[in-house]
Length: 88
Image (cartoon, rainbow, N blue to C red; front, side):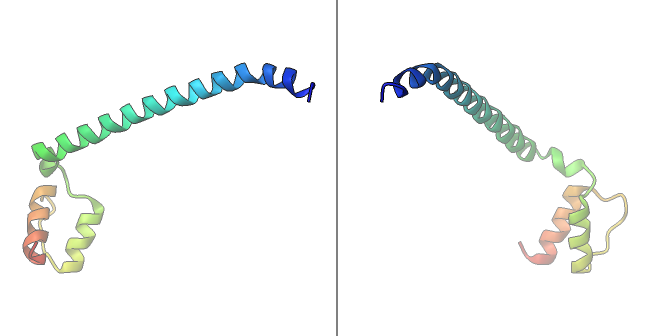
C-alpha cells in the first residue's frame, strides 16, 4: 500500500493534464460542429445550392426515375423535376 501512494502522486498531475486536454478538445469539437451545422443550414436556407450543378447521385436517381433533363440543368431544377415525378 505504501508503494501505491507515491506512484499515484506522480501519475496524478499527468492524468489532470490529459483530462484538461480532453475537455478542451471536446469543447472545440462541439464549437466546430456547431459552426458547420450552422453554415450548412444557412447554405440550404438561402437556396445557394440550387444554382450548382446536380450531384452524381441526383443524376442517377433522375435516370432511374426516367427523367430526361438537359446537360445544363442546375441542382435545384433537377430537384424540382424529381419532386414532381415522385409526388413529394
